[in-house]
Image 1 (cartoon, helix red, strand yellow):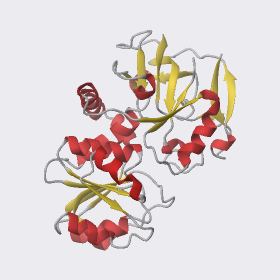
Image 2 (cartoon, one colour):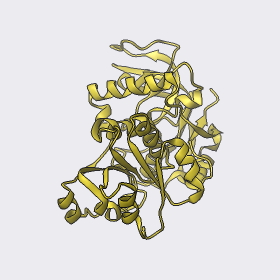
Image 3 (cartoon, helix red, strand yellow):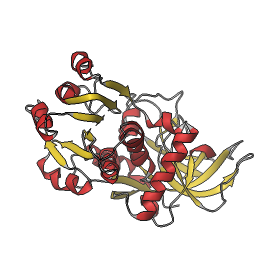
Image 4 (cartoon, helix red, strand yellow):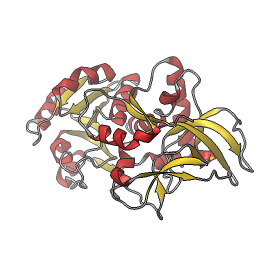
Length: 334
C-alpha cells in the first residue's frame, strides 16, 4: 500500500485528499518508482482548476509531473533502467498517473537517471524548469551573442531557467518582474537588464526599445499572455518569435496582428511536452542539461521542502508572493 494525493473534481488544491492505494505492478514498457520527493509546478495548479492545456480523462485523478525516486519494479520490454537506482521523471501529460504519491507507475520513456551530485530534492527540481526553457531559448530562438530575449515573470522557475540558459549561450537577456526587490536576484540569475513593470505596463515598449538601441527583441518567452503581449509587440525585431507558454493573466492573449505584420513575427503556442515526445529533441535537451549540471553551469534552486502531509500548505505557499525563489518540494518520507 502507498499514500497518494488525489482529486475528485476541479475544485483546486483545497479539494485534494490523502488516501491509501494498493501498489500497482508495472506493465509493458513501464517502471514503478518509490517516490522520494516531488515538486510543485504552476501547471499542476492550473490543471487542478481545469485551466490547463490538457484535462483529466476521468476522476479520481492524481496531480504532479515532476518527481525523483528509486526504481523498485520493472515491467516487460524495459531496457536501460536499473533496479534500485534513482531516476527523475520528465515533463509529460500524466493524466491519472500523477507523481504526488509514494509510488508511481510510469512509462520508462519519461524517466532519466538522476544526477549523482545533487540532493533528492534537487533531483525533483530539474527537468520541468530547464527543459521548458531550453527548447525555445536554444533550439528555437537560437540564443547567441547579439540575440536579445525577453523573459516575462522571470522570477518563476522556468523564467529563471531561461535567464540562466540564455546567459550560458551569450544572449542578451531581459527579465521582467513586478517587484523591485527581485532585481538583484534576476541579475544574479543571468539577466543583463531587469524591467520592473507597472500594472498598466506604462513605458514598457519605450524601455525595451531603449535597451536594444531601437532594434527590438528577437524573442519573448512569455507565461503572462493576455495583458502583456500588446505592450511589447511594438518592440519586436524583424523576424522575432513569441513563445507563449502560460496563462498567469488567466486569459488568452489577443494577437497584436498589426505589430506582428510589421516585424514579420511568429506567435507560437509552446508546450515542452511536444519536444519531449520527439526522440531527437528529448535526447538533445537531456544531454545538454546533464552536461551543465555536471559542470556547474546549472544548479537547481530549492526554496522550501514540506512533508507529505503538508502538500496543501505547500500549495498555499506557492500561491503567495515570495521573497525567496526556487522550487517548492514535497518529501514523502518513504
